[in-house]
Image (cartoon, rainbow, N blue to C red; front, side, top):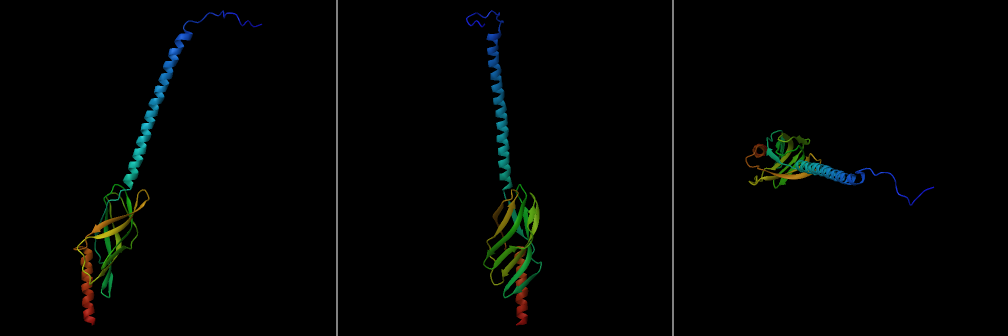
Length: 193
């Protein structure tokens, strides 16, 4: 038989009901503060990693390239008042990440240039040469304003970008070699006639 109306005759233990509640509240607060601190640390780490990743992507997308005409006397031909020469373009990677120069081309009245060699990988601060084909019209004077080269460049993030770089033709090895070839062609044409 169960007596529901009776008193509980067990003696109460001292301090079990009243002192456990403040201790449990303090432990809960300590757990919450610990969880918050861990969340802040992990969140800060995640934000830092995200920022570093974004900075790396931006750094890898930078293209800082210098291009200079080099010799153009690697063989050529002359016909009907124009000369075609094989030459080199010196490339300098002034950017913070490796790049691959895939193609170069430019065109203006009396002059064209296009790359004929293999793409060139350039490490940061590295240099290399790219083979190019040059075509000069002997009757057209070379313009004093720089030629705008269009370069197809693959950056370290595997993106292909088109960049331009001005190149001075006046006084360059390309101009000198083309003029001497034009003079030689004109002299030969005069001898033949």
